[in-house]
Length: 111
Image (cartoon, rainbow, N blue to C red; front, side, top):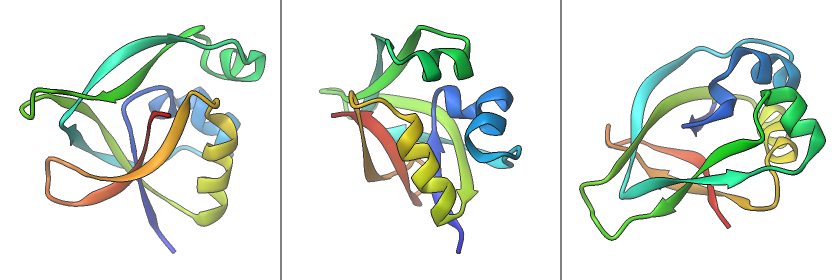
């Protein structure tokens, strides 16, 4: 089963995809409507090692409905969704959200 997952951050990186899913993902550009990005410092050594970054971005609801966060929609399996849940630190929570294209996808936003 293909599950849509929207990423605006490190899950778009090839090295993170290989470490998390064991393969490279193909996706299409889209945007998360009604959100904006904030910086967040990650202290999980495995996530920092996989991404190469200690500072990531996190989507937060915006008071400006015109705000959008650009990113990529990937089609993944249930097992890969569980792997992405394990990759994300507790500051993030997974929700299903509408995208600018009119479709919906799972996305990680501020918990």
